[in-house]
Amino acid sequence: MLASRLVLAVSAFLLALLSVHFALFSAPRMAELRQGTRELSPSGPANAQDTDRLATLAAAEPLDTGPYIALAISAAGTEQAGRLADAIQLRNPRSRSAWLIRLDIAQSRQDMPGLLTALTRLYILDPARRSIYLDLITQIAAEPGHAGAFLPALSQQPPWGREVADRLLETQADTRHLAAILTHFPSRQSRLLNRLIAGGAWDEAYITFLSFVPPEMRTGLTTPVDGEFRGLGLPTPFTWTANRSQTRLEPEGGLAVRFSGRSNTWLAWQILALSPGSYTLATELSGSSTLDGGYLRWEIRCAKGPGLQRLDIQDLSSATRRHSIEVTIPQADCPYQRLSLSGIGGTFPAPLQAVISRVTLTRDPSAARLP
Image (cartoon, rainbow, N blue to C red; front, side, top):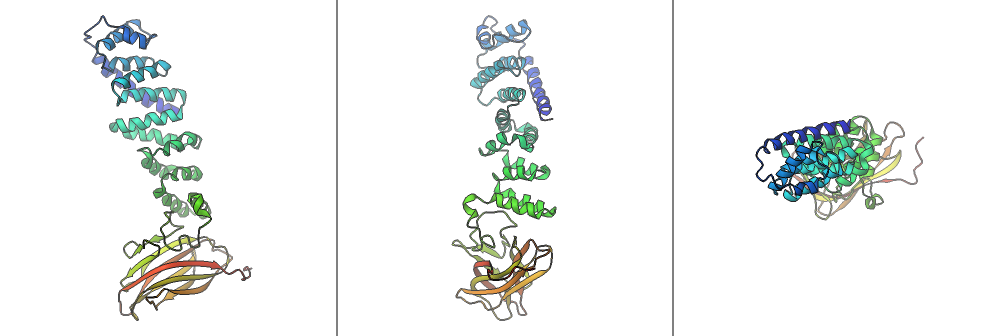
């Protein structure tokens, strides 16, 4: 399928170019000068008369790429065509035709790195046909067997990279292959995780999340992830999703909160993967609030089930204080949990400000495992 699509696309381009250039060859000016193109293309087209005609034109107009393009078309897919493409690019470094010829050579050899190089240059040089090049690149990218050529191409940050990644997110079913591609596009990783979760593939989503964590970070992951709110750049929902209108990350770590005290408002949340057992949910924060003006609440619940525990914080002070509560993760039907921070509206609403320095969930090592 890939090879046939490439052949059709390249053939259409080359035939169009051929018709245009032969229309321009009707009046050669220096018919006696032929040797330049004869040396470049000793075998020439099948028709010797055409070879002579093209050789004459090439010699007559040494800066004209047209004769070389026509010769290259007649020698499509051969080493000779590659040498002619070199000649074209010497005369016009931005020649779209030369890269179409190289594309034809690469597809005839099933040379994936060569295909991607040619398609990348054409994507830049030929914006009118950019969607066609994107289709072809996406076909290459969608095949896990082409990863050996495609992934190194992504490391060069090609201009089509994000568009191809977005297309694959809509169509690619092979999670491992797609995850390997998205390691080059961190901003797209959350879309894959959320797609898997929406389809009920929670375990696959969590394993894929771990594959996105750089090796140097893995040994230092906390529970919850980024418990000091330093902005690690990892994909949601297995790290913080924050309400940007009500919160911001502090430069040295910590989550600053501004809450009006009116209606209940979510502030931050993430998905956890705690095993069954007893834990201590603890947080350290400072701030200011008024009596009955509104307060903060940490809540942990099963991701697909009931709430488990709440930690309400109504007595903020300018000094950092620790607040904690015990929580039990049940044995059944709770493999993933949601930890959230909310602002709870007060009887007499008043602005609340706080900085959460840290939040942790620590397993109780002395607690017996639940039956």
